[in-house]
Image (cartoon, rainbow, N blue to C red; front, side, top):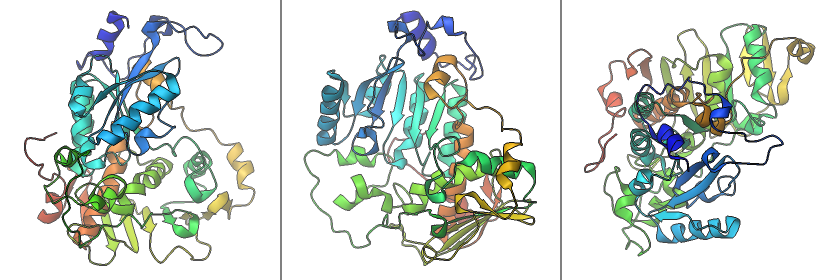
Amino acid sequence: MNEGRRSFLKKSAVGIAAATILPRNVFGKMGGDNNFTAPSDQLTRGIIGVGGIGRSSYHYYNDNRCRLVAVCDVDSEHLRLGVEKCQQKYGDTPASYSDWRDLVADSNVDIVHICTPPHWHGVMACAAARAGKDIWCEKPMTRTIGESRRVAEVVKENGRIFRLNTWFRFADTFYGLGTEVEPLKKLVMSGLLGWPLTVRISGANGFAWKFFWQGKTNLAPEAVPANLDYDMWLGPAPLKPYNPHRVHQTFRGYWDYDGGGLADMGQHYIDPVQYILGKDDTFPVKVEADAPQQHPDAAGTWRSITYTYDDGCRIILEGEGHESEGKVPFIEGPLGKVYKGFECTIPNVMDIINELPDPPMRNTDFIECVLGRRRFALDENIGHHSSTIVNMGVCALRLGRTLHFDPKTELFIGDDSANHLIYQPMRGDWKL
């Protein structure tokens, strides 16, 4: 790879502003009908965590703009399978690492793709940014409010490009709702529904909260398998006896690593709603949880979680017990309602929407954003806001009470126990 360009991409000085736009001829011609790709045009990517989503076909790809060159996992069997998949798909053998810090330090990697359990996301994203890497992070952005705030700060300080991998605000049908987000955004922007609005994310509207992501409360210690570096898998999380239900596909059921179905799916569902409501730069001021008493270690189920903004808008997450309810609106305002499939109480609503101006254009191609040093449409700041909303709900759920939040200080008001959950201690020498 051309060292001049690689040096440019590696720089972490604040002077490389995310908003800087470089002319395409700096990088050569790519895409379109031109199949020629100069070596200096191709970015490189490394994946940390290839046991689940990180080894999916969705993430295992090469094209003329970006090439997968490195994989990392603390489970040697996962790592072996990750390497083999590269060999089978591309005929290339990627660099392989058991310690993610070695992948981050690899000078041949431009983009670090974080596919680990969420308790690692904040530490890895901050380290990658400081190493001059751009970052593609799976959802949820982080496990705590404080971690996503720090990631946003460090990414900005080091002039990096960040992508949070939840895409429903700008692509695809919004899960079970049966419509894309864009017409909903246009309708809300028009004011035809009135204000304030209530958004109901419910099983009745097709949203599935994955309540099978629950922890077990009677785990018996077992021997750590030879293929797993359990101490490194835990990393910043508290040291607890190994049991296979804590790791790999079932880790989401434990507060130390994730937050059950709420944390698993919450950012997929809440992030587009933040966009629809035009609230990407703020937070709710109150969160209420209706749920059974939660176990201190194992995440459980919940009935509803309600967020209220200072202008009266609400997001209501409806969980267990709401799956088979009758017809309920997804968005409801004083002047109209919108149901699943974009069924609306406003007559001829689609004719009206088609006449409305489109929302501003957004940069939704991450590789182009890296090449041109442009902010991605779901960057670290937007991701921090929707991640914080999810984690506000986690805090209310764990504590079993209503919490009040100050959007300016990003702290809970008059609740020390809740604020202790914002920045949680990390084990050993791990830090953000």
